[in-house]
Length: 222
Image 1 (cartoon, rainbow, N blue to C red):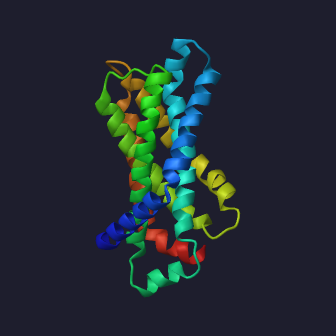
Image 2 (cartoon, one colour):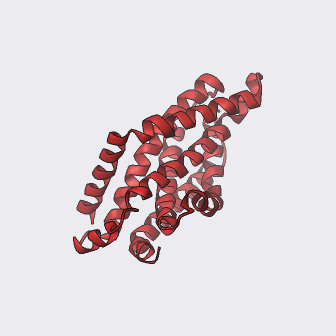
């Protein structure tokens, strides 16, 4: 499983590096979204700082749809799923590889948006460890859920619109928890961190396990 996961992971990242879709579409989209939100919030530094975490993670969620859609389009060619089954590639490995590649791209987006939030929205961070842990857990959850649901709608013609409609309600706990933790990272002390971290961790574990168990079945019936 892990050997197949590594092969799919490397393959997807090589395709993205060659196509430069992330460089020319996803990252500029995320940057423009952050800039528009900054203008919408107005010139007040207090308002900008208070909304920085929410604006950043809304941008991350929207970027997730673009990255997952691109990831699933790689597998949408005729006969690809059948070729993988004939080659004996473990569906769980395919899921882990694709989710891992999505996660790497999401981390790049989060890094860009984090820098933008600091420069444009006056985001202040007193506890970087909390930002890093929250971002990693949220990224695992976003990439696992996005990859699983992306496979579910991957064969449909309207997958670009179905994917956000299907996944966005599911990602609400991740969005809220990530925003609260980023906000808490801006102060020296905070309460309720364990609860929000447990939400992100539980979500990540549930959807990673679900993807490992059911990704092959989802592919067969999609």
